[in-house]
Amino acid sequence: MKGMKKRIYILLVLSLTTSIFTANAQQDLLLSQEIFSRVNKNPAATGNSNDIDIFLHGRLQWSGLEKGPRTTVLNVTNYVEKIKSGFGLSFSYDCFGVAHSATNAKLAYSFQMDLSERYILSLGLGVGAYAGTIDYTKHKLDDMREFNDGEYTMDKQTEISPDFDFGFELSNPLWTLGVSMTHLLNSESTSFKSGRHLYAYWTSLLPIGDNFSLGPTVSYMHHDQANLMEVGSLVFFKNLYWGGVTWRPDLKDKMNPSVLVFTLGFEKSRFRFGYSFDMSVGSDNLLPPSHELILSYGIAKKSKH
View 1: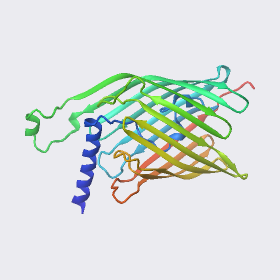
View 2: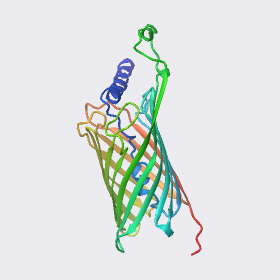
View 3: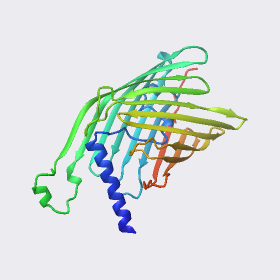
View 4: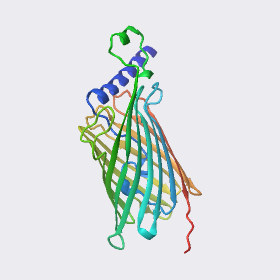
């Protein structure tokens, strides 16, 4: 049984590697709790808090799979009321597997316009660099004669390219609608950089009585021939505790099978903690579960008023 499970994991890794390097279908990092801090996907979300917000996001995908994908995101944002502008820094590191990783660092800016007493339009631009790395030294060959045949290299290769994102968010007191496009300069993905991604999402916070609120969310991502959709909702108690379920259906995409995501979290004294558990569903789906943590802290700014 252990041998069969090991073979299944090997097939998963080979399938992932083939999809990324052969089909050039490299995608942006996938996060289940990204709605809490969207700056790395949409710069228009920069400065949506009155505090200086520090947000750390970590994901272990397919736990139990040796050297499975791992992701880390750090977002720092601030809003300046005097000029109606948000400023931010987004840093992400995504390890796809044994030897392939990507680092993305961006500065984000947003300008917020009051369309009316209830509606705000935020326009955002992200500028930075994308570094793709393939480290062949991390591959282990059972037979070193394969290396001598010239089929493999033992070098580490990194390519750095400029990176630009653009997006907008339309908000009122009850909901937010966002659309963005990342990696504007890249029409196609390669082994060292990610191609354009289109994102669209709608999220809301609807009061239910005095203590509870409902937060439904719908999001969509399109890249090349890949499509990803999420539908779910969180339930908030006194805006301090939350839990919910998200469904990520299978849209006939081998890289993104059907998944259920369960989320729990709380907030206290400007500190926020969240945990999510991703579970594959479907009889012919053998992917191990994934775990995700978020930590954030809001630094209150001094005000003369």
